Image 1 (spheres, each protein chain N blue to C red):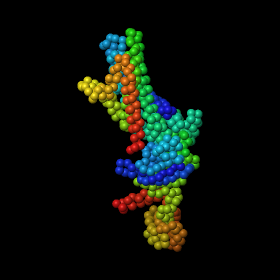
Image 2: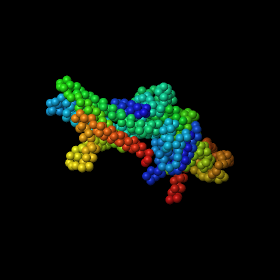
Image 3: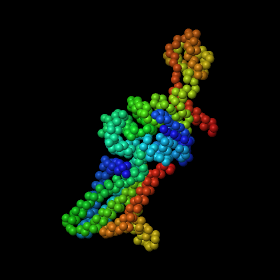
Image 4: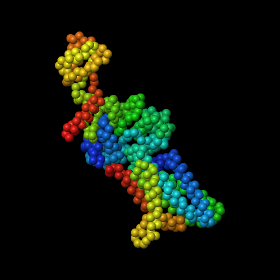
Length: 317
Length: 236
């Protein structure tokens, strides 16, 4: 549905987007992840025909974003960052205005608006002036607007920014539901969000794609997932030295918590070291209170990828 | 054309949701009413002589206040992004906004017909110059509005848009006077480019196609530049 080839956007002397290529398939949900200023918004603005690329091509549902921009814009629903709304209009009125702009036939407008009000849960504020709504409600009005013409493709720029935790959960549910029938490209820097919602993740940094895969694969790719957290009673220093002796253990750190030690064991490979640790503990007769594997979170993946990148850059420099 | 009307309707509503329309119209009517009374007393004749020139001057000051928000506000609040990523052309947006501001302008000058009403009650005015003057006012309005619209598309600050708009209109008005300082093509061009000379013939009861063409073509040129300027976001 979205095909991007060698897309570059150059501002005066920085490449905001630097030669990126990617594809998004039908009904796929892809998360665009990256630190601030990585080029997420620029990429989205190019895809929504708000600004053109310096080089490269992008097509959406078969239409070129530069030469066929009106057709592209009819196919997409775009929610910009910070959700700009006309603050002097009522919710109903605003959605009616947007429905007209998006060429929805007169007879269907009311029905579509009602459907979107229901879907985003803003029926109760439909007669309020948008300027008086809270941030969360504004966000939902924006979302209702992006959905109103039932676009095939949704492009959402940080859809959950500035919401309270309950609202975040709700909006995510809505997006997840939409992902079943729509192609969704969303940007965020909240990692659990992409983990929950997206089929695929694309990490961009400094305008370049540094990783693109499913959330599970990305986590697998990076380092070992064999880190273990333990709580053991006894002399911390001694426990540390005996655990360090185990084959496959890279490093052990510990800190005291009352008469209990909390240990963090980092494995060196793919191998699961928990059984070896168990045997060692039994042999030395320590009292084990807890043992759990520490899953690598996307935060770590993200951190590793984006900082690795900057290290390489500084190495080259 | 449907998109033009959608944009037009929104802009008109937005004028009357905000205090701008009410404030501008009231200020205009109070000021022009005051000067109508003064001129009437001074000239002692049943015509809009003098009053029209003061009306024209207030329009010159107030039209940029009408147009200042058209693009500046959209750019500042970011709604330009949702607007321009909808399936509308840049021309639809520019023309819709232009028509909305021009309509407000017409709404603003319509109540001045009450002056004409007074003249017919207490005297016997010649309607020829009055009709032609109002044709002139509307044509001049389209020029003023398009100047304001163009300037609003350059900035995100409404105050800046209004101030520069007023200054530009004043310049456009006074360059006509400069032509009295000399002869030759240069001064002749200035005289033609300024609005004053064209406006004057309307107040005398003359509807000259040259003046009509001046206003219409100047408006079209400015609207064209505005469309290009809105588009220029795409070249940068």
